[in-house]
Length: 113
Image (cartoon, rainbow, N blue to C red; front, side, top):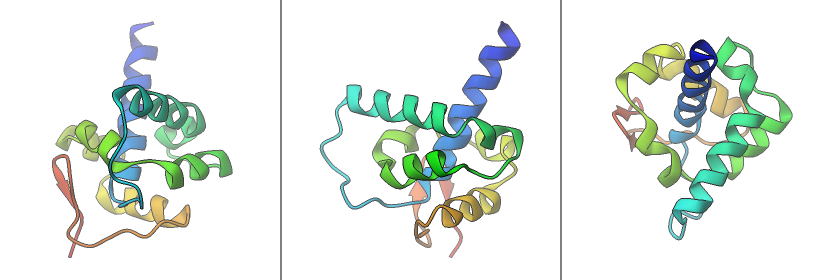
């Protein structure tokens, strides 16, 4: 159970890193409940990403709908290292059809210039 919980936390953080490099159109107005729902949908839709797989269509749909204000607080140096670094996250987000802005700060990470 402890290993399962640990994997789940890492997965949520990995998905958060994937999306944090994207500035969605609607930044304001997310309630804590909406952010929690968003994180849960990402967790369910993007489970395979934590195991090194590319995102599924369902995962990409959640990535495109995500708000950085909900996920940026989860981004830590340990998270960046756990999923293989910022470049992998950027590649995955781009693969989902999202633009990755340069010099964007989210949590402890700033995207490359």
